[in-house]
Length: 116
Length: 215
Image (cartoon, rainbow over all chains, first blue to last red; front, side, top):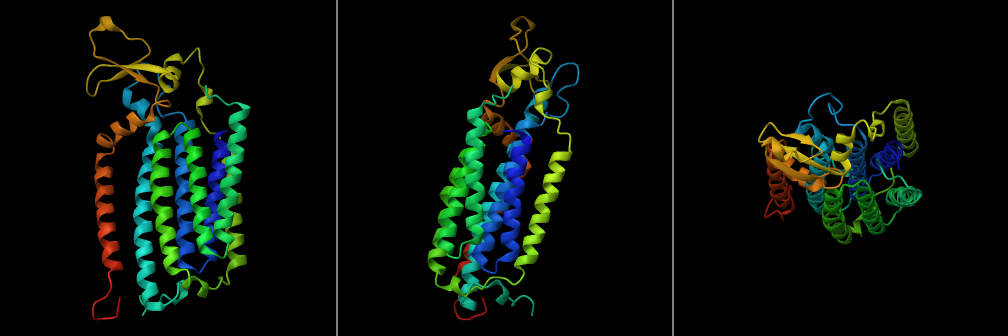
């Protein structure tokens, strides 16, 4: 398990999610593909924070405690991405319900109220 | 310094194959209820990857939020709207989007293998003993407030405050707790605001319209 393996996994998930977003017309399938894309980003962040040397840690002299902790910045990005993705999923599913009440189907190309 | 045994590699390849195949099922299957189940399996496999990367906190959050909450939310939405989902026909842009995503993947692979990543493998157990101990063993924080330095021995005669810690790759949860109330405090508060606004907005959108039928 090297950094390259993990990044390839992340890139594969990202591409699969991109294909799902571009090729589907079903609103719920598009939301699922978006969740795949968010997860691929979190995998990349955690992998970087595990394998990349923290900035400034090989300087001579004393190592400051915050320099060491910066090795885990990727985890913080992961937590924030997960929080935003959860909010987004809840809001998007509420939108799906509201739109299906008006349109009586889930086809995203029928959503044209905002265009007119 | 990373324990890279054959067993870990084997588990990693098996879990990765599971993640990729379940993600492909999510994209291509017609029945969206089965797609939601496959999505839950994908999230579970990703949580295993986090545990293998010593990111226990993120792994636990992944299981709680994604497997526990978002998958159930998706499953409920799918169950309510299953009859409607038959009406969505596949897009006519399928070959085009396939080409786009394959090009994205190829450019990522080329980039990943052409960059010289500065990884922790360049650390030497004898030269950088202090750093290696602090990352994967045991270290001491000496001093107060802003002036905290790390050391690999206790230095009890220097008169400084000395706190013993596990290496940050072993105990990432305490470092995340420190981050949330110090470096990332503003971002943490803004995330809380976003969650509140999102939940209230979601309820408002979901609400049955009373007399006017315009959403």
